[in-house]
Amino acid sequence: MEVILTQDVNGIGKTGSVIKVKDGFARNFLFPGKLAVLSTAGNMKSLELERQKKNLQMENLKKEAEKIRDRLQNLSLTIPVLTQDKEKLYGSISAADLQNVLKEENIDIDKNNILLEEPIKALGIYEIPVNLHPEISAKIKVWIVKK
Image (cartoon, rainbow, N blue to C red; front, top):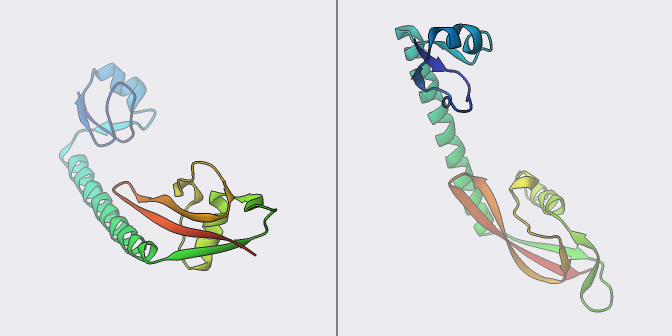
């Protein structure tokens, strides 16, 4: 029996794959769990429409990420902080702090996409990589200065 997977199934295939499985496996496991549907002309057509819709969404997200990357390349963030004697910060600057500073600039980036290896604990100039899209990344230039 040929089925179309509606979700990723370990050891079987990925979403949208058309695979051949035994009838009992499909009826007893895949269909009740809504992991697959029968491979018919109507289901194949809806699968193709779903793929086109997903591709269009990915293209739109990529274009938006490119716009944000262009804004980030021309952006230099200055963060004033309290310091101890020799350029050491009282606290540290984390990805969440950088996210808040970017929000003030009307740029919304998830803190998990800001690739800060460890929190910033000293004054200086830093270039911090940011993932905007699976294919697009950028670097933020951050100046940590005395308050």
